[in-house]
Image (tube, rainbow, N blue to C red; front, side, top):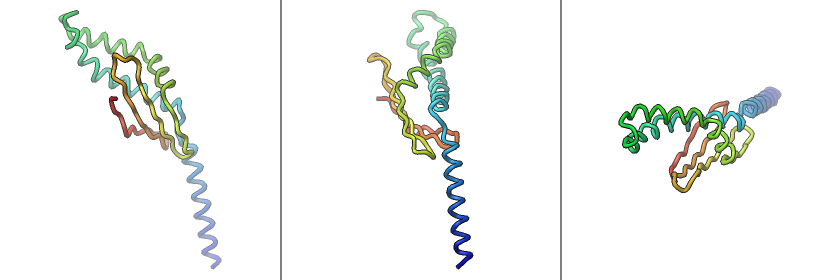
Length: 132
């Protein structure tokens, strides 16, 4: 009977330590913003900037020039991207993990996007990304 109490006490202590560790490793909103800016910038450079030259090649016959200009514009606009993400993100903090919901709707002329990301153990996983 005494060994059962010891095992129960050790198990309870282990769960408390695990919970405190997970809470400590729950990434904050600033870390999410860095993650989201990096992901969105990469997406814009890899997907949008590669399509832009095809749509605007009448301006300049060199599509690589337009692609480089687009990528440079994305790099220059990172502070504004971070500000948009900051303003349009809702965080649900569940102590041991957080859920981030970001709705990006900049202009009626551009498509809107909805992202849902979970943050746990100083890592992020975007489990929903959809154009609206």
